Length: 277
Image (tube, rainbow, N blue to C red; front, side):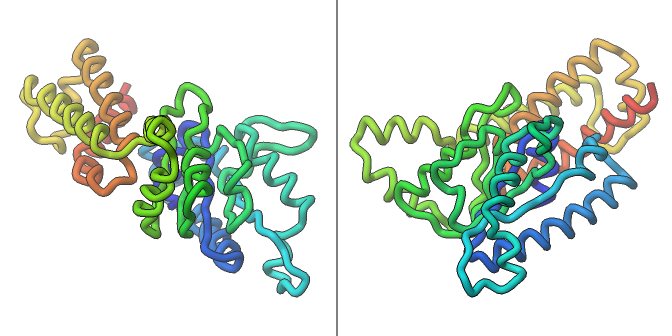
């Protein structure tokens, strides 16, 4: 989750929601996410190929928003306070660099169980990591949550499905009439079209490199010499930008992994050239 979030969501300033299967799982998720973020920061301090804003990342916080019971154990009760909920939700909805009445936008990942799945509007949320089966209208509302318009950098939202909600989604859509089904489907995007675009952008950048005699993506000297030409470098940057956009749209679908090696190699060569200037 953290690797996907840091590569595809955090760089554009957007936030994430994790839907856990129970309140206990929600609390455990927070602990695991916090630990993973600490480890990720340590690694990024050694090498930061994506040029992530580490100062912002170091202030990023997570929180849990769950309902409470009278007999909750202390580690659960800590996250059931309504006052804490209000502050955390406000922080989550704010951009990272904004503050409102003493509340900053530092919370980047919120973990829930039943709360905030319906009637919760946060355009800054771009990804939902779904580890709980949700059905019917609640499922459609949850999916729509990450597709709220939220700035030029947010072309779509991501649902990372860990439990297999595909057949539940079909049943939910089948409950609508034909016109309503079309409206719902028009807001959803499945990987096929994006995958074809990714394939085309991949072929385009490989053809560009071959045009200039580059067949070994690890030949640093050849890249370095070629990118002295500003026109060629600009042409490559445009192609790389298109490939980046296509990968962002397809991820985290498994099919995108086949292109990741080439993408990372191209990115490393681009970073090397930029560093040498």
